[in-house]
Image (cartoon, rainbow, N blue to C red; front, side, top):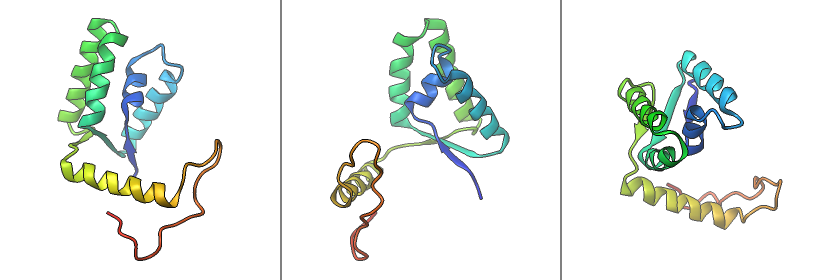
Amino acid sequence: MEMKLMIDTWGWLTLRDRRETWHNEVNVFFQDFRMQNGLIYTTDYILDETFTMLYPRLPLSLARSSTELIDKIINQRYVILEWITPNHFEKAQVQKNIFQLFCPKPRRGEICIEKKPPPNSIAP
């Protein structure tokens, strides 16, 4: 089975900021995942937020090298960049509405797994 990983803003920031509590663990996980040829994804929305947060958070030289490194690994196809199109966004909104309808916000520590949409419901 092919392994897949989605890196969000926190993941990118943690990979590049040594002050992050989980920096070492995330780096090891990322390198191991790459060695296993897993598919790594991120989105243009995530990168927009990441780049916006890197510059005030890190020294200029490290922020700049971080954005260059992320660009490089995307260009080398180590990470697949998904562009969020209006169609993607619309599907996410529909999915969110279905989830909220059949899984109201659980209390702290609970996971909503009991309720499922009826078989004839519309899903993306």
